[in-house]
Length: 91
Image (cartoon, rainbow, N blue to C red):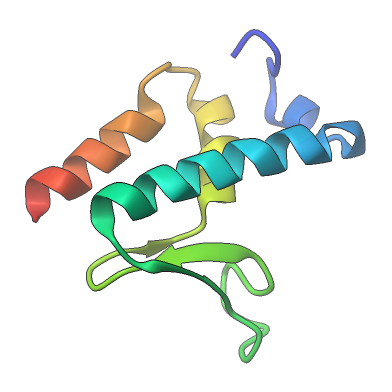
């Protein structure tokens, strides 16, 4: 939260590699706990995460990059872990 005070800051081109690393880490963590695999939707350009990596499991499908950006907007340090805990608890 200190590094990215706004979603505009996290979206800058110079941050691409760092943000990609965050998304990969989050995605692998979700995959570890929820199962599933990485997918990229290429068949439907109207899909919300068209051409972006997603994690898809039996009961979960989402784009880790969206969690990174949303956590910057929400400004709480436990936003992503709360999402993961909610999915684990719902199993």
